[in-house]
Image 1 (spheres, rainbow, N blue to C red):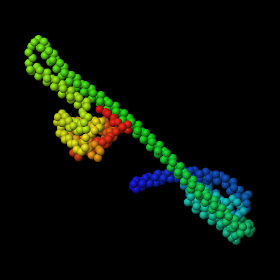
Image 2: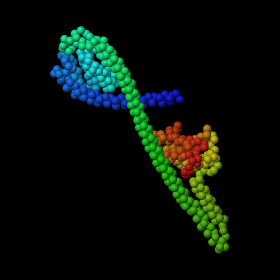
Image 3: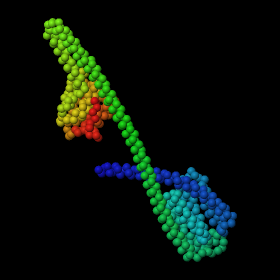
Image 4: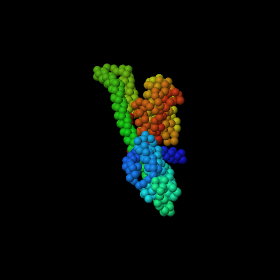
Amino acid sequence: MMSSRRIGGSRITARTAQTNTAVDAALDVWRRKATDIVLTVSAIVMLPVLALGLLGYAIPASWIIKVLGLMAYLPLLSGVLARRLDYRVRVWVMVGVGYLFALFGSAAFPQAPFLRMLPFAHAVCVLVLTGEKAGRIATLISIGVTLLVPVLHATPGMVPLLTGQGAAPSQPLSQLVVQSINIAALMIGLMLLLDRFHAKLLHALSAQQQATDDLQRESAERAEALRALEHAIAERRHLELELSRIGDEERRRLGQDVHDGVCQQLTGALLRCQVLERQLTRGEHLPAASLSALSALLEEAIDEAHAVAQGLQPLEEEPDALVNALRALTKRTQAASGLAFLFTADGETAMPDPAVAQHLYRIAQEAVSNAVRHARAEQIYLTLTGADNVYTLQIEDDGGGLPSAPGTGGLGMRTMAYRAEIIGGTLAVDVSPHGGVRITCRAPVSSRTDTGQITHVY
């Protein structure tokens, strides 16, 4: 029980891992494409802004700010062109230089809202384009940049150096510190919200992908089951037709036996009676030899008719009919083939259901016939046992063994398996300890089909 639970749990874990891998692969493709789009659009939008700043049409800035702006734009442009490079590296190169530009630009111009919100924009881009872990690292960097702005702004000589003008800090330090703290707090709240939303979104995608995979798997399993059912139905119809053909051939053979045997002997007896009738009409003396010959013809006809009847219905209605029929089968086959037979009946072999007995007899008849014709055997063992409400019929030989893998066979083997299925039993084929083939049929004592009646196939 525990083992089955562990196996079931490991299968579920394996399916979940496969689903997560598929989602990660799809998300990786999307992030690569999104990185290309973001970098391309950013490069196009920032180009006129950079040009105006370098030409001096934007806010006054020193060469340091201009160099930083150019340094921030060049990695952005490189990220657009170097598409073979891993997209995560391209994103981090872009935001890394962007953090420097945001830090020094905000220190020089703290009143510029774009520069103050640039770290937050970088954190969002890293979260969306590279994942939760990288997004958290970028958030910490953005908070650090935001809180360093008042420090750089208050550093003596920093603002004139960055702006290129001899001006003092244009904004009170206390006001700038409060502003930076508020921006950092807002950034923390929004990034936590985006981080949780990102995790929920990935979980929903994984669940949806797993549901899709399960649906596809169930559809494939249903299709496979349907194909197996169609194959089983076709095989069953083929076996039923083959059994019907075998029954027709058996009836034709018996009819030929009746015509060539019983009818010929009765015709001979009739002719003998007509001769005797003419002799009586002429008043002649009837010798005893003539009556003896007629009696012999009639006895032969009776014996032949009895043999034909045995072929039509080899089993009687008695519970021991199967044992008697199997014993007669071995004796008859031994006399015809010259092979040695050993028949054994053990346990509760009384069989009140004649239909089950009929099918077991036909299985034994087919197996014995195969052994005689194909096994090149010298000894054939036939065993019938009854124990634990199960009948076991076993046919073994010491011949050349199986021609192919155990469990395979021709139409005769499938016919025996079909008969075993009809009575609710099983048929197994393997190697006999005597070196040949062993065929084992096991059938429950009360074998019934779904309708409660056993199918009769002769």
